[in-house]
Amino acid sequence: MAILITGGAGYIGSHACVELLNTGYELVVLDNFSNSKPEVLSRIKEITGKNFTFYEVDLLSKEAIDSIFSRHDINAVIHFAGYKAVGESVCEPLKYYHNNITGTLNLCDVMNKHGVHDLVFSSSATVYGIPHQIPITEDFPLGATNPYGRTKQMIEEILRDLYVSDKRWSVALLRYFNPIGAHESGRIGEDPNGIPNNLMPYISQVAAGKLEQLNVFGDDYETVDGTGVRDYIHVVDLAKGHLKALERVLLTTGVDAYNLGSGFGHSVLEMVDAFEQASGQEIPYVIKDRRPGDVGICFADTQKANQNLNWVAEKTLTDMCKDTWKWQSNNPAGYTKTQDHVTSIQLAP
Image (cartoon, rainbow, N blue to C red; front, side, top):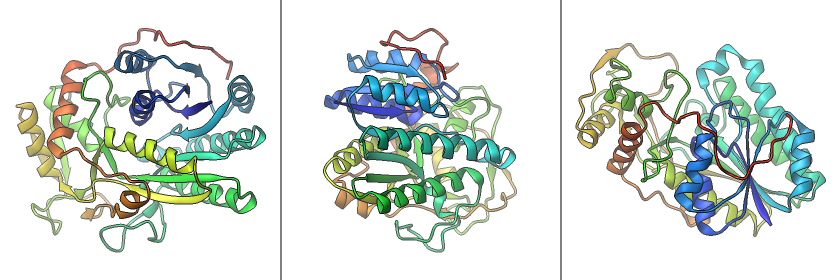
């Protein structure tokens, strides 16, 4: 039996593939490379010394998904695939609703057809919207404030309705906080298209000289230094959380949400200082006005994942910064465009 990984060439998906392969799982991976590069596949194989089957497929093609399930004995699915840029989602909401929701509907329909009901879903802390208190627990009311977050929230509701209709479903909704870092080998990491939307890849590109300076939005919050505080989690810890969630859904039924974060926060300037120490590079920055909708402090309560999944984030902020810098300095242009060498079956989208 095999585990299907959608979006397995992406930032978080690739690290999850490494953890699953190292644990001994057989993987079938699919991706359409809309926000990833083929080169990552050969690097996963390089890190693990293990092979897997890959399909270049878009989830909007139900026929292609069905063909994969017909060819393989799929036991469970970890679903990463989806558009993820908040700003772009505000400018192009229909693109996000169509891709993220329709793709998931197609996937679940094919899963149901083939009798596969175990699913780990890549959700997001954006489903909480503006939190009314800190730390955030999983029973907080949901209120996403942008189209990207609303697609995650809507998919969560769809998956809950699936279980109501059919008690065979077992679903883990993993609400990520802020994934950063890279594999300790420096061979896989975050390679955003264009100018980064998130803090850590932006800082690392400033350190590498690709960007001139960091813009810090707001220095008058009620925090240790006036800058916004967020919960950052090492991507390898996050990947291990998927392994733990998979183990649970394979043994249970029902739908449960879990926060995956470090459980505490760091300010923007604390992140800058930690990265300067890890990299030995100066990070020039300028203070800008607050952005509308930003909150001063946001971090997770992770007790539910700690207790129910037997999972805890182990890596430190220093680890996050050192691994990010190793990835960035070893791969200044991100992934190359050379073809992967993983066993690959191409299907028309």
